Amino acid sequence: MSKTRRMGNIFARDGKSITLALDGHYFSTNTTGIDNTIGELPKMIESGLDAVLVTYGLAKTYADSFAGVGMLIRADLSTGVFDSSVPNTMGLITVEDALKMGADGIISMTFPGAPNEATSHQIAWELAREADYWNLPFMCESLPFGYAVTNEESSKPKVIAAGARLGTELGADIIKTRFTGDAGDAEIVKRAQRPVLALGGPKTDHILDYFMFVKHCMDVGAKGVAVGRNITQDRHPAGIVAALNVIVHRNGTAEEAYKMYQAY
Image 1 (cartoon, helix red, strand yellow):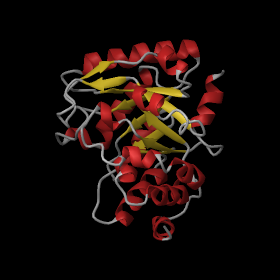
Image 2 (cartoon, one colour):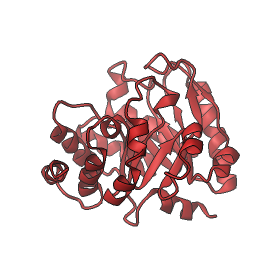
Image 3 (cartoon, one colour):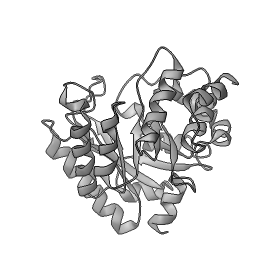
Image 4 (cartoon, one colour):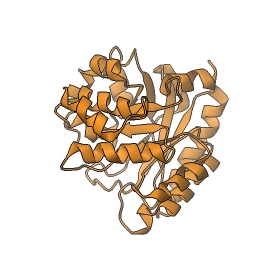
């Protein structure tokens, strides 16, 4: 199978993607809602979900549930799962493993500027090279200075843009990274030279604020979002997806998305 065909399973015909991140068990114990959300996948696919990002274990446990949606498998694992900052990662899954599970893509993190950057870069490079050989899209989640925003530099658009470009130089076909909400985020997309998915987004007191953030990301050039807890920990996961569909695939406003969410 060609890489272009597999990319078409991750991104819709418009070149954009709503990806549901279900890989939290590899990085945290804050995984409430993941199993319940998987039970709602048919509704979510109907509402506009394009792809899921899963662990090896989830791909086995819920193989039937993922049959009708694009699937990327997470290749790296936190070495300190009880530390939510994700202090370090290790390589776990190979491209061959992912292909055996029927994946459309594979993903790993890299941490430019962090003490462990050499390890994370090596994992990403080896996956990218192997993925190219097998025509499997590789998504690089490039997060300056680490998984968590721990210093001022890690949330500056120019720094995130440099990290995104490093992911591209390591061989990524898709970049996943954080956006700040500032106009300077356009530089992230420009520097990446690859489709960029905006990472999750902030937890807010009002869901409209989150939709406004997503609209900003799309306006500066993102090709979609990769969302975890803002979907899995909401009372109406399919409603969040339907609302994101309004913004990502229909070019609607945050207010229109909010109305769609309220309908659920």
